[in-house]
Length: 253
Length: 65
Image (cartoon, rainbow over all chains, first blue to last red; front, side, top):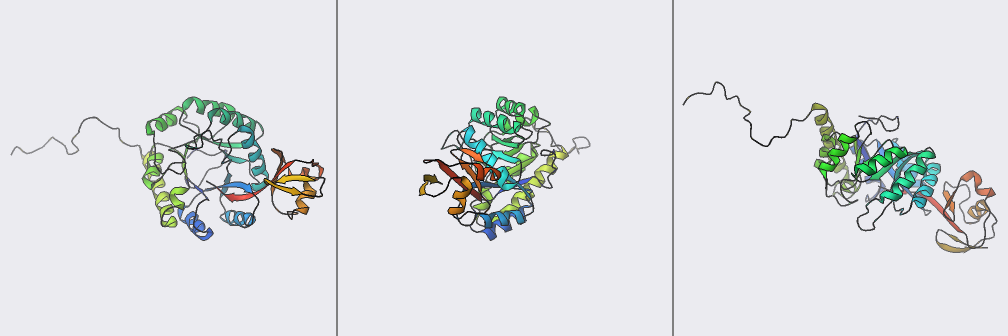
């Protein structure tokens, strides 16, 4: 597995902390997932912020603050600065949303924010699309991780453009790639890892499962299976059938 | 002085961000602050002056994906 800004993750799982029925269920899901990274956010102060942060910190894994809900580079940069101070990390999952319905990234503002944050010493994990030109701009800005979407956030659709994601993997062999958003089933995670990706980032698929802890385990198993398969070298796909049993020595009956 | 705190109008007798946090009950608590859309580091709160109509954001950890 490629490293994330010098950090080698123990597992290829990044898990969100939102939408669980209770903090206890969230903790159980994290345990079962074996996640190496937990995503968090910053919102207006209300009761429980410190208690929530204590729970996340006790998980003992890397924390990745997001800039969810930001629609401009300025908002995202300010949020990232606040998160760096609050969470005491220079990692940031950079989200700059361009469309309220699809939650699609705004590629122009994303690059603008990435340039500013990388120059300020942040280790940026940009939530992006599978667009290779945009990916190049983000790498040129200083990003050393790319996180293309699989499908719209929270949709559970899986990979809408697997060919595009595969092409992105081939185009950036040295950049850690994470599919972030849109995964709904463990098989989607396996598919991502089979393509040689470095991790998956998911939240709703686990948090809104009937049994989040069991689903978290299923995702962990699938991601591991996909990673092992990728390393094992999958066979090429062929257009035509090819007998697996040797033809030579067949009886004349 | 009338300022907006997290989108809600407040009348606070404070001249700096630090004083406003104390008055609003967030003194010593772990929060992140921004004034009129600009990040205010914790170390700069007692030197950051407030003006009428300012928008103060006081943020804390929240669940996120």
